[in-house]
Image 1 (cartoon, helix red, strand yellow):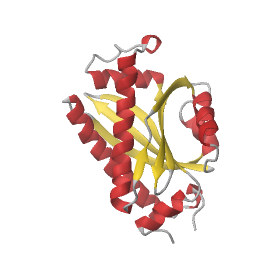
Image 2 (cartoon, helix red, strand yellow; image 1 turned 180 degrees about the vertical axis):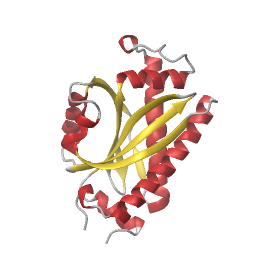
Image 3 (cartoon, rainbow, N blue to C red; image 1 turned 90 degrees about the vertical axis):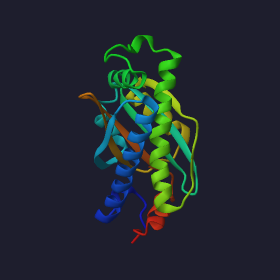
Image 4 (spheres, helix red, strand yellow; image 1 turned 60 degrees about the vertical axis):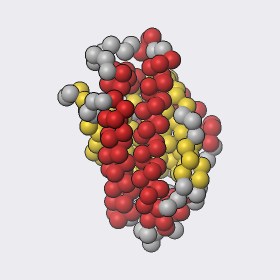
Length: 208
């Protein structure tokens, strides 16, 4: 019985990492179709990390970030957060909208640019959840994305306030987007609700 990501075995970690890689491959394909341009996307690192250390990973509690959050219902309720620095978020919007790098400015983000970010979040969460669903036969239904641009500490506090109980440790997939040698790194977090991690591992056949 696994209560927390910190208790995962190497085999369990490998299974979750493989799903992350498959999800990233599918997301890169979906992005390429959406943009008619090649964006390479990889998951170079999968880590388990105490929730309290998440701000440190993304530049500290006072760093300015863009966070896209989903509440996921279905057979194993969970939460997803994709987070990256606002500077990187602007570069990603440039990639998504086919602009020259550096054209999008934080201080003047408009509805179209925000929508582009949320659409990216939709693609990332859907492709990862589809990969997870394919391996587990569990249905996952993501909510409409919520986008927050604020200090990292405030974004994380808002998420905690929204769903209350969170595992002590989270699964982090470091996600790397590259277009024409321009690299953007973001972090994709999976925060299962109590009991969901066991449900997922059992369905994967690695819960022992």
